Amino acid sequence: MKRYAAAVLLEDGKVLLAKRTATRSNYPGIWDFVGGHCEPGETFEEALRRELVEEIGIEAIDFVVLMVVDESPDFILNLFLVTKWNGEVSNRDEHEHERVEWFSLHEAKRLEFMNGNYLAALELVERFPLTL
Image (tube, rainbow, N blue to C red; front, top):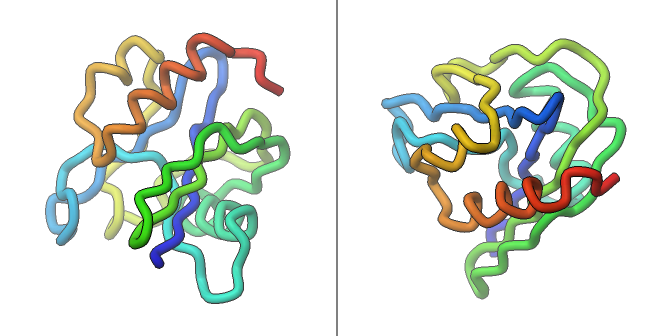
């Protein structure tokens, strides 16, 4: 089973999204949350922390599971709401993402995502903005 962790970073009512590069074999040019696969033996939380450092250069401080997407038997994703971190957000992996950008929740819901559950995650954040 493929296991993934991804982050919904929320700051001042805006969410951070990453646009996948056009050269990616899966979902090229599509908007995505920052994150990736779990290494063998790695928890979802450990994968989240590692991926955020690798891809955008931040250390997650406050986060909770926002949604679990379970498409058994092949795929499971833990989507975390991250509201506090250390470091400055920057695109550290231009091979994965051509850019990272902050969007209002309203703007973000108009984008094309790689997973249909991402829209539901944004709606959860919009309805319950004080989750932490």
